Every structure is written in C-alpha cells, then in structure tokens.
Image (tube, rainbow, N blue to C red):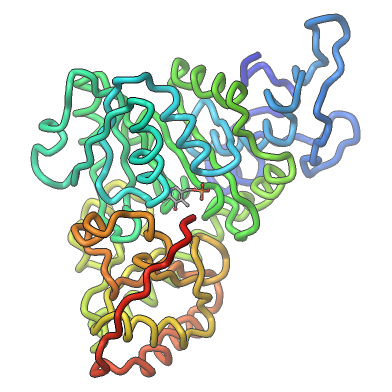
Length: 412
Ligand SMILES: *Cc1c(COP(=O)(O)O)cnc(C)c1O
C-alpha cells in the first residue's frame, strides 16, 4: 500500500506556506464532516473482501492510520516533498535512515552533529558495521577528501547545535551526488518555514518534530520528507517493519501545532533578533552566535539559503562555570531545561545538559565549553525576554573564581 493510495486526505497544496500549514493533507471527515482531523484510535480497519480495504486504504494502524496520514501529508507539503513519514521521535527517524544502509556502507557526518545523533552513530550504528567520518564541511576540500568508494550518505545539520555553524546545502549536495551518495539534512533548527533543504538539492529531510514543528513542548516525535521514491520505499518499509511509529494522539498534537508554525516562527525570529542585537557587545559576553547578526561568519550564506534566521542564540559568557551558573540560576522568563523550539523560552548549558553524551575531547574541539549557553527564544513579549537576560547578566560576577565542574551522569 503506498502513501498516495490513501484517499481520505488529499495533498492539494496552495501557493503559500501558511495556507498549507493549516490545510494540506486535511479535508473534513468523510463520515461526520468533522473539520479537525479526529484522533483515530482503531488498530485495525475493515475489509470488504480479503485484501480489499475500505476507500481510505487502511489495514493495520502500525502500517498507516488516518491521523498519521494527515500529518505526513501536511509535513510533506511544507517541505515541498512528495512523501512524508512520521516516527516516534526524531532519533526514531534517524534510526530508520541509518537502518536503510547496509553493513560496510560509509557515512560522512558534520562533526558538530546533535548529541543524540552522534551517540547513535558512534555507539550503535558503528557496532552494526556502518562506517562514519566526521568533518567540518566549511574546511575547503574536506568533503571530497572524506569520500570513499563505499560512501552512501552525507549527514548535515545546518545550522548546527549548539554552535550554529552553517553549511552550504547546494554545494554539499553537488559533491555528494557526484559520488552517488545521498544528502540528508536535519532541518530541526530552522523548520520548513525558514529552510527547505530539498529545494537546495538535498535528497532527504528529517526533523525532530518535538521542537519547532509541534512547538508546544508536549510531544516527542520525528519525520522524514523526500521526493526520492526509492528511498521513500525503504523508509516506509522500515517504519512498518521496525515499528518505530508515533501514536495517533502524538500525530494529532503535531498536526494541531503545525497550523501555527509560520506565525510562531515569525515571532521566534523577531524576538531572537531583538535579543541578539541587545546582547551583542555586552561587557559580560565574550562571543555571540546568531545567523541573523552581520557578525556571524556565515551571515551571507544564511541570507542565501534560509528565508529567516530562526529562534536559537548561542553565546559564551565571560568567566567560567561559576558565571554560567550565576546567569542560569537567575533567569525568570527562560526556564533552564533541555530541548528547544517551544512557545516558551528555554535555556540550556550544553556541556552539562544536552551534550553530556558527547566525548569531552570532541566537545573541546567544537568549542562547547563551560561558558557556552544556548537560548531557545520563545514567543513571549520581547521586552520581557530582553529584561530577563539583562537582570540575570547583572547578577553575574565576572571576578569570582571558577569552581570545578560537576559532570552530569544521566544522558538523554
Ligand atoms: C532533538 C533533536 C534531535 C532528536 O530528536 P528527538 O525527537 O529528541 O528524538 C535530532 N536533531 C536535532 C537537531 C535535535 O534538536
């Protein structure tokens, strides 16, 4: 059964993103006329004769169900893709992509990859015989040099987490294709509203829906979007065969969240821009990274391949872990918590929190030190956000000596 066979929800697309965000993949329920897609809990679907399903073409809910189908069609439309598939988490989506490879295949990944993705590559996929090389795509010729005869896949995150470095998607796609490898882009940080990697030459896009797409920090989920029928077929097969599927309730929440994606992203960016401009040059900040600032080393590339600059800001506070703690303990609008992309502002200390699973030497090489702080700027009032950062910075004593770092034990 193929994705396009499902008749319940159409994939009619509209000229503009905001209309697709609200309507793509969704038509009133054919039985009740319900305007919002119902949460379809049935695990099984009646057949009129063996092998002849009802018009919706559903059989068993792990393979496909109406709520998930609507969400998958919607995200496909927003990424400009023919096919969309959803999973129980972002890492579930990544697992499916990696499992579509064979023992002995080689993957080239950005060195500053999301912590959990790196952990999956280093500690699980490597054990199953997939080979990995980690590179900085901005080093001239690094990609060409890393290519091997068995290179099948190039894995990119742009901007990266947490240092917000960009890679030129079109250039990387060109080199990957020249060597018969596919390019996968983790588009979590930008969302399809600000960046559409398939239009830049990527073959596959993945997201942690947990972040901006759902946008309300209340569901863990992932997606893949692609125009490539062969790879779609592999992913679709594995989605069912490995069973890494989201619940209908998760799909309902994500579908509900995605309806405001364009409006939320606009406000995330407005607030992040105002805050980044206010923070830049502050006496207690040694460096700030936000792709929308002219001082970002890849600001021109950001303008070229993205439609906006997003809601994530990373900065390095002057001092050490003591100063980081003073800042983090005094925030009131920002909540100190892992994750990002929700309507609420969050702050994270990657070295101790999200990136604890990254080996210490790799962290040091990437500049993820004790003074690095990552902000996920929410959509609250922008003046309140700036005031919060201002008052927390006032509490920071740059002269206080650093205390030893206490490493976190648990990983996520
Ligand atoms: C959170 C995140 C993931 C993993 O997604 P989960 O939904 O937590 O499994 C992958 N990539 C990036 C960039 C992320 O921020």
